[in-house]
Length: 202
Image (cartoon, rainbow, N blue to C red; front, side, top):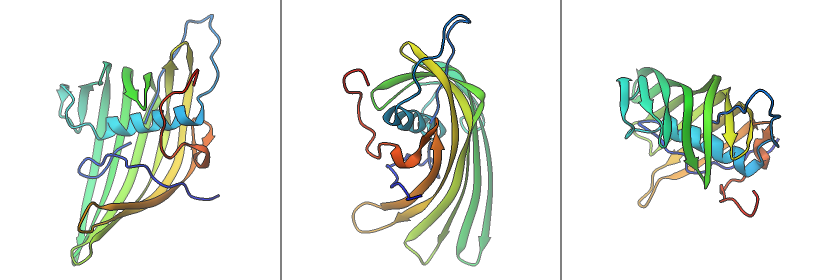
C-alpha cells in the first residue's frame, strides 16, 4: 500500500489530530457513509481537538480534563506522557484519548457533531537529537466516534498508522511522512491530501 503525504497537522507541544458523532432517532436509518474528503475533514477535526490549547476548561486542566468544543458540546481529554533521555537524544511517548459529548466542530467547510463510541485515541513516539536539525515520530490513531453531518449520521472507526517528522531549515520546517490504514472505512490512500471544501452536494 503506498503512503499518503501528510497535511500540515497541528502539533501541540508535540502534535495534533479527527472525529465525528451522531445518531438520529430510533426510526431513522443512517445516511450515506462519509466521502473521502469528509472522512479527511473529520480526522483533521479530531486532531484539532487534540491540539486545541485555547479551549475553555470546564474541569481539570486543558491537557487532562473536560473542555468546551469549538461550537457546542464538550470533550474529555486524557493525556499521558513519558519523556526519556539518552545522551543527546530525547524520546517521548505520548498518548491522547478524546471522549466527545455532543461536540460540534467545523473542519474543512463541514460542521460535524460527534460522540465517543467509545473514544478517539492517538498514541505516538517522538524523538530528536540535539546535534540534529530533524525530529521523527511514529504512532497510531484508533478508536471510534459517532458522527452527524447535515441529515446523515453513522460511526467512524479509525485504524491508521503513521510515520514521519520534520527537518528544520532557514525558512519553515519541512514535514515528511506517510500513513497507512483506514479512516471511516476509507483507505488513507483515497483521502484528499489537500482537504478541500464541499462542492455541490458533497
